[in-house]
Amino acid sequence: MDQATVQRFLDGMKYEAGRTAPPPGFPQLPDIPAGRYTDPDFLALERAHVWKRSWLYAGHMDEFPKTGSYLFTRKTGSPIVVVRDKDDTVRAFYNTCRHRGGPLVKDASGCVPGFVCGYHGWTYALDGTLVNLRDKRDFVGLDPAQRSLVPVRCERFYNWIFINEDPQAQPLAEHFAPFTQYFEQFQPATWRFVMQEGFDVKCNVKVLMDAFLEVYHLKSIHTNTVDRFLDHRGTTIALYRNGHSLMVTPNRRPDWSDPGTRGMRRVETASEISAKNNPSFNFFPNLVTPVDPTGAPFLLFWPTSDTTMRIECHWFAPDWGGGPRSPQWDVRIENFDRILAEDLQFAESIQQSLQSPGFKGIPLNYQERRIYHWHEELDRRIGAERIPAALRVQPCLERYWEN
Image 1: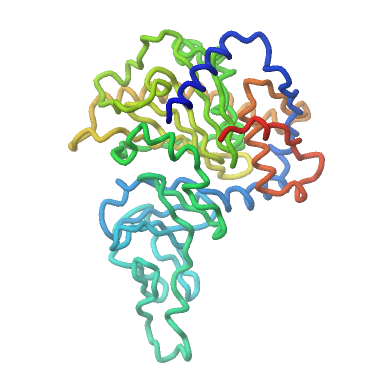
Image 2 (image 1 turned 90 degrees about the horizontal axis):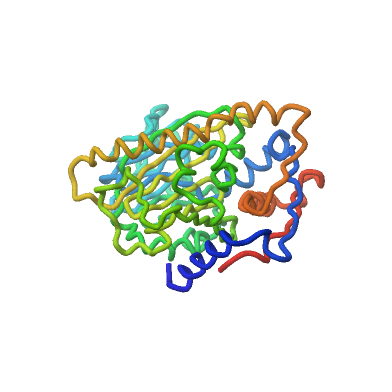
């Protein structure tokens, strides 16, 4: 993050803390139509055009320690295996044999020399090439070169691996700009995987996502936790193309530091914005990460049905020099889980309300504009022409995008 960007956020926090109204000319945001959270046809469009065509987090290089290490996921709605090849390239394929669709792997993770379909024994190299099949004599004219595993786009953001089922998707580095440059301050190539945990929640995925795109709720549900050290009224926001956004919230006291991070290794190259404030990045559609110089969680929001979801917390930290992680991590994660529980407490009740006649739509204020920005991108991904007029959002924030 260059000095001009740092200064932009410092000035932004000062402005936000002192303002008495939204900036002159900022539009009144139209209500978000209720059906965007409940209508089955709209949610089907969302699955097809967002979850099937977005860059989605798949893992960290630490989870692929050697050749043949793999992770298996169904989170996009398709069975996909991500594997480390002999040249240390990480590749992704549909977990689908080219013969009759048998699975290549069944476990969530493991290590294999190659892929063997358990149904009829077709065998593939780690690069997806079909290398052997039983009773070749009976497959008249079959060309193995035309029967490789079907690949899935797989690219890296530093040591974090993302997949995308859209073969025409924009390259990952371009798609995540300017976050690629912003993350350099954290020396991300040195960061290690710490642990992960997940929680199933009975609400539409957007219900919980929305909560992590604003701090308007701090004084209501985080009274004895986050609100004690974050000043939500000073929060400044940057909106970017492709639906991404960044929210920076100042500490109430300049000398405050998270007790859960004390004694942990810190990245000394982190900017003032990150070292003394609280930046939270949203990589559209479903990754939120509040990054600290001592480490960060990747919070991932996955739909499991129209009315249920799963939130995962994947923790990373600057390399601590080998050996087991510090016991301080147990304290830190316990503290974070306590805060997360506060965010989850109303989710199921909100979902019940969404399905009642009392839910007519969502009026958003200036502080909640990241949510509206997210919905604008959702319509761009789906294509407004595919969405019934009553369920579209009116584009009005593009003029506030930053480079």
